Figure 1 (cartoon, rainbow, N blue to C red):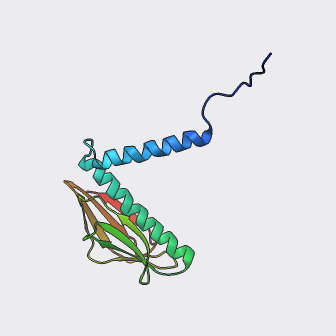
Figure 2 (figure 1 turned 120 degrees about the vertical axis):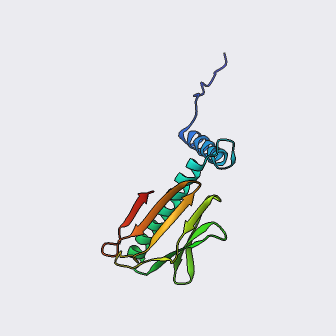
Figure 3 (figure 1 turned 30 degrees about the vertical axis):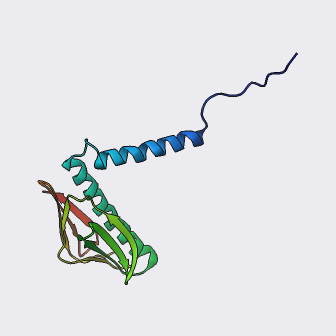
Amino acid sequence: MTLRIKREQGFTLLEMIIVLALAGLFLSLMLERGPVHSTLASFLQARERVLSTLRNARLDAMTKGVSITVRPDMAHAQLLELSGKIIVRQVSLPKEAVLVAPVPIVFQPNGLGSAVSWVLHVGARTFNVSISPLTGRIMTRDA
């Protein structure tokens, strides 16, 4: 008589997480470069990247206790978060995005920011973002 060891069947949690992460990467590549690409997707992506960069910069300024500057580099279609002359973070924008930013936004360690207004254009869609000089709050408006 032989003993048969019963093996459990199914997937482990780690295997599922890896498969879902890979599927997400492939899906994001398809949305960015595939036939499903639309100006709305580019607009929403650019809008979220601008907002998250500004929020991260304000948080970095408050937690690190230094001034943080966010300036666009439209030649390379990206936003740069700077601490002095050191690049803290680079965030790429979709190639269709045009960011009209006359001056950089500077966040102080107390959370206040320079009173600046930026305008983001992607196709026919427009988005305005500004910083409140009194509170440092990031204010948005879709145009």
